[in-house]
Amino acid sequence: MLETKSYRAYFLLLTVLLLVLVLVNISLGSVTIPLKNTLNIIFGSENTNPSWTYIIWDSRVPKAFTAILVGSGLSLSGLLMQTLFRNPLAGPFVLGISSGASLGAALLIMGASLFSGVFSLNIFNDVSLAIASSLGSFLVLLAVLSVAAKVKDTMSLLIIGLMFGSITGAIVSVLSYFTSAEKLQQYVYWGLGSLGGLSWSQLGLLTLIVCIGILLSILSIKPLNAFLLGENYAQSLGVQLKKSRFIIIIATGLLAGAITAFVGPIAFIGLAVPHLTRQIFNTTDHKVLVPAVCVYGAILMLICDSIAQLPTSASVLPINAITSIIGAPVVIWLLIRKRKMVF
Image (cartoon, rainbow, N blue to C red; front, side, top):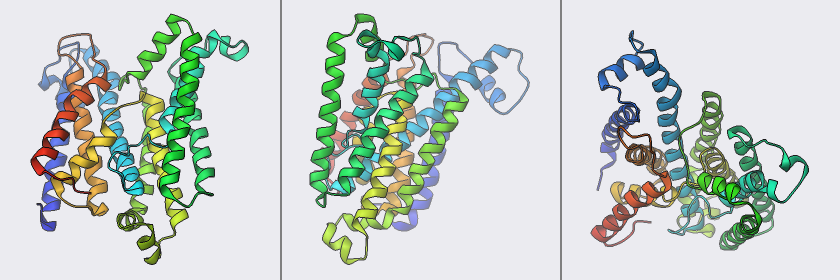
């Protein structure tokens, strides 16, 4: 168990590890760039190969920052949901927000096979896909918020969120059944998840949204700690249940919705990292957990992305497969070793 006074030193160690993993991640790719040259390019030294500079700054650095944002955002949204619903199996997508993003992507990619007009236009690109996914997740989030205003029981809200996910999933299944093989393949490829391909402007927008979600989470630390002991106890401490629930849901919607829109649905991270963090820090205090899950999520995402990028190969493995293959055994091992779940 870590003592309170050791948290600062431990976070410093994790930050150093994070920076090392960023350098490792940037140095990997289909084009072999020596680490010395990579450091020279990053720190502005002259380099004789301009193509390496382009590869580093326009491909690998944005991908590394995307991995940090995705890992931090999904891990934090998972922590919010597990605390709000007091359910260790809750993840960032239990409210149907990810399913809404998938529905938006499905309508854009596969809608051309079923509808005329706007869907028949050749508008499939990264920007339009992100916009469609964002609109889908935003509409589901609005529906969940409208229901949350009328439902007092948090578990009922969880069930309703799962039903929203089932409805949108059913619509996607119908679209998949009637669409062409080419469009279905495009949708499946999007569903595998990818951290590459984001421009600096898209990365800036994603950074802004993730930072807003993190800020809302920091403002909700006191209600989150109170929710651990039940809503009645939280209310006795002066926590405004509806207001706090709304802020937590909005934060989760921003984090999970934006990340899914830009990089696709990424599995495992949001569910497992909060458990890993609790096991390692052995605490339920969200003053510690909120920054800790962000750092651990970023570290784990960088490791998974480094493994997915096969060295000296142009092939990149699906990030969803790597997150599950690497992460799930770690969680199983920790739970068996600890013999109980800190929650």
